[in-house]
Length: 110
Image (cartoon, rainbow, N blue to C red):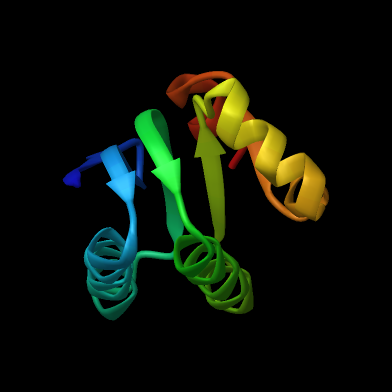
């Protein structure tokens, strides 16, 4: 899994690439923890290059959505593939997460 981070207009954009499998979930959790420990609670996950997301990854996203919102922030998602977007619909996560077509729209959503 590849993770790259940058800040744009006061929002941290985290680019995810590859697979969030067991090892990838650990990397994702560490990246999100580091941002929260740094006081960053307005986050966008760029998921355009993400090819797989397992249940551990979904749990981590739900956990960090809750933490972000409890700290007056949010966790926006952008660029979900049709496959991953369908998973979000099936489990109902599309009702909880703000999902955007692209990064500029996700940042504007704040």
